Image (cartoon, rainbow, N blue to C red; front, top):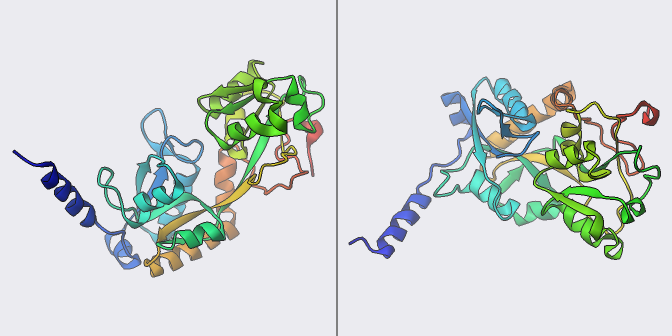
Length: 293
């Protein structure tokens, strides 16, 4: 009979012998580079109706592979309990059930403190700034300059997100009874279209991507969010820290793609506004009366 100790030993041996991510030389020799993406994460990385892996991050990765003149390998990863875990599974160690590390992982939030805490990873230059934003039905909400409008009117969020946690406690809990929960932003936006809620709080990219499905005049904007310490973050790709040559070459490529406007064009192809917005700036003029030159 096989003992549990033996089984665990086999698993440990397997984990310790997972293949390493490829160096730049190996990528060029094999003419193949593998990127890891978050699964079920539209509009950045998800499977379409045919099962093909698509999304903004996937398209950007394809641009990188084209610059290297290699084939792109795509790997979807489930989000773990933290981004630290995702980086371990995705680029510097791998996971015994999901395989070895990929060469590159997309959509990693960056700040200096987080980078110092993850010294096994090299963070590449950022390619996008994500923001927390609001979609507001201005036909229902006439005064959309603050959250006080939702002391009495419903607002939608995706369950167990930053927006959810914030709204439940904002203004001493005065919005709590009017916060409606949905399984994803697509459902929350649909609820707004159907007048079940009059606004949605989420990331700007998810709001814009889902709004483009509907012919509606909704305002996408920033609202004052007192007490919210994080309302925006930069996103980058990451590789294993000791993969120095690959990191250097990828940084050069990301710089080229940003300078040429190729990354911005990818975002616009998904209906997203690439412009970084200030707190007082309307992000997307879905209604012409709110347009900003």
